[in-house]
Image (tube, rainbow, N blue to C red; front, side, top):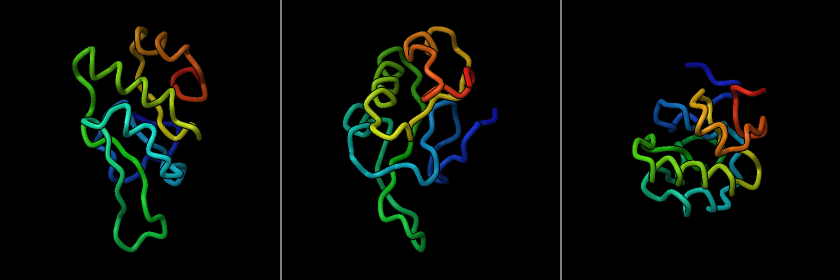
Length: 102
């Protein structure tokens, strides 16, 4: 799996991710999916806080929350790199958040 954008290093591997350096620590995505996302930092890096996926969604409810996290991201930092047609449709096949439609 390849992503169009560089992933923040603390993202767990998978189709849902946060772009490295794009998070502005607004907290909105993590509020939508608190079981899937966290906001933390890597010691020694200049960015103090950055959201990332700590687990990938599996159940339909988790996928819905991950999609909601993408949709509330104010700076398009949260993205989907997969090709599942249902998820792409849920995200309106928006190239601002879906890598496979760029």
